Length: 75
Image 1 (cartoon, rainbow, N blue to C red):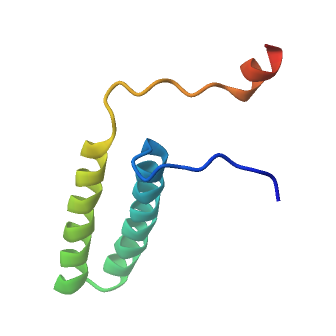
Image 2 (cartoon, helix red, strand yellow; image 1 turned 90 degrees about the horizontal axis):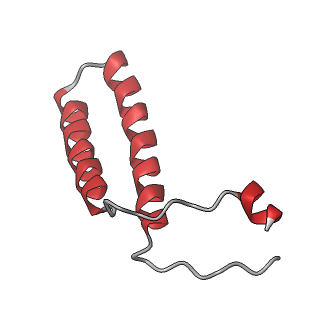
C-alpha cells in the first residue's frame, strides 16, 4: 500500500467528500419521492438540503487552486 499524506479533519477535501455523499443521498431521496410523494421523504430532503448548504458555507472562499498532475510532472 503506497504512503499517503494524512488528511486533517479541517481540510476542505473532507468537506467536499461529505458534500458528495449528501448529494448522492439527495438524488436517491428524489427518486424515492418521485415514486411515492410522502411528507416524511420531503422532510428528509429538506433536512439534508439544509445540511448540504451548511457544509457549502464551510468551504474556504479563496482556496488555492489544486496543482494539476500534468503540470507537476513537467517540473
